[in-house]
Length: 251
Image (cartoon, rainbow, N blue to C red; front, side):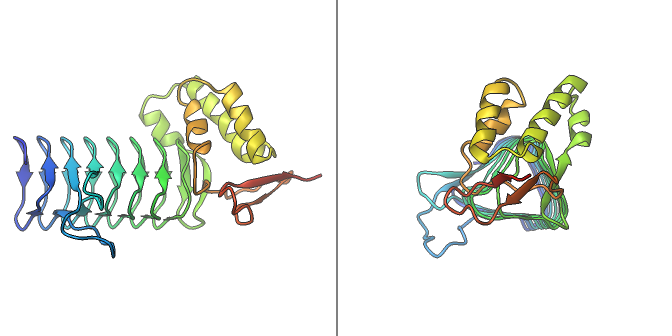
């Protein structure tokens, strides 16, 4: 089903099981609704839903869900640039930007207003939080907290996404609160469970509360910070049981 107002370029393939909302622009060579690239994929797979007013550029591929009862979902007002691949069962929110040759593996969640620079790659089941800014060629192997910037060379967090926050009219007070949360997570020296308890108690409303929502449910852990404070030792590899960063006080 394709709703009114869509512009579809030449050599676009829109396959069975795909639903497309109104006023989307789908450029030449895009393939929407292809079968999942999975060894268990058969012809009886799920669907693909695309919302409204998305700009889907040349040679983008977006695959249907692996499960018959599920859908890969793309929200509204997204800018998906040349050569992007969005695999089966991904969920892309609203007003995101995926630059050229960005690759999302299966089951990735990309939240509203996130920005993925060219060549960024996300491992399956990773989550990328709202208003996050991910640098070019980043390898996303763990969850990306909301509102942060990730450096493409180190694959690590380098601070808040101040440019994106100001562009979206976050106030100075809101940014100050987000700074407090960031310092608590990455620079307080608290152990993981202690840090979560502090987040839950101190930041209960608005944007700051989104950190606890993600961190308390993460299954893959979160990307570490590039700068390691002198007062702590952070080991993201050894705590395999919880898949969460282990933060140990020293000194």
